[in-house]
Image (tube, rainbow, N blue to C red; front, side, top):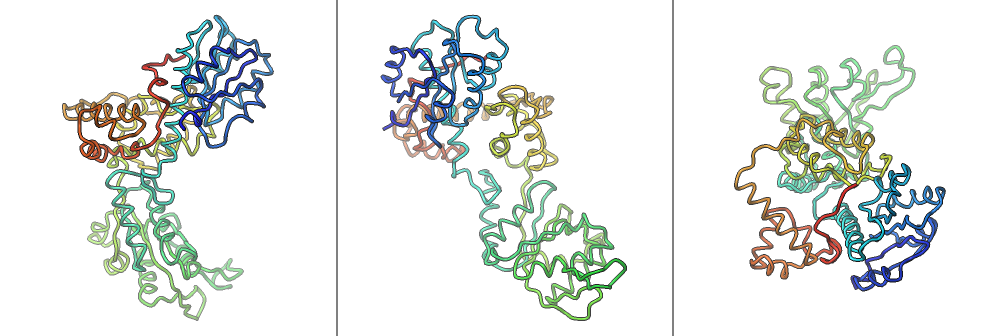
Length: 464
């Protein structure tokens, strides 16, 4: 039953029997605790919970300090109860500001505090659903749900089934190596080595020895035999990143290897059979490079048997926010305080910015914002994108789409993901609602308990 899953951690030395009864009537399972140690014992691993921290009980300063570690628990949404003037204390004010979703001042309305706790619980439940939702689409470390990324995931699964060379094209920072790893891990070579080499990061005079290795005494300083990257990948996959920057002399050696499938170490006299699959990637316009004579066309056609185009971040629409939230979830442990997500101005800036550095730039900006943020939500200023907050003009079609999406989302939240009930409220058929869910990318809300019951979701919650 729903009431069994909606747990309330009520921290108080003098719990209100009337308030306790009111929570029970609204479907909460209440556990009254009096210390930080008891809070940690009461919280059930992996389950969302609401929390009511009754600071009006005159806890001692050392007890309040001990509560801070409990308030950082990711699956509890806290609300504080305070006395008038109590938040003049700097330590208490920081505790409430940084870790609680809301606060109420005694004397308070019973319904008001139950609604506030319900909202905090609902926000925690939404966060857990977003972080655990498997419908958003993923391939290993890659995350995305836009049409371009879903097409990329399909291509990865297809080319992984063959042993033909794959050529990945795309701008810098789009995650071409992640795509190569995903192909390798889904291929028959998954248990063999995946060996990457960045052809643009190694000086030309060293690239030959890096690729093919050398024997002891082959040149000054060659004190022992070294296995090259090609030989090290034997049985597995060799990933040639930034292949467009490969010098012409190395292009000839690589072409010879692709034709003969044999390598000869520098200073050696024996040809060694090597069985590798080649995956290449570059941001270079290869057509222009071949026309200008910077890249051999015969090598290109050897490498580009199967081609995959990596979409730039600016073309991934809703994935920008999805990726930002994914990175926040991944690196939020670096924050000095509990972060609740992104402020509205940050979301606007994420979509308005052009992302010349693609996913790599997004990761770096979010990681910096996590460390530098001084509030409970990451702002556009934290992302250093304050100048991109201004929203571009919205067309009537865009406004209609946004309103439609919001109406559907609220209906599903009120009816706990039940399509039939939500469709009836919206005045449309279940089939039409399902079609709209697909078109808006909202399938993840179908049939899932997203938040607290309707009565526990207040229209607005004041901010500190």
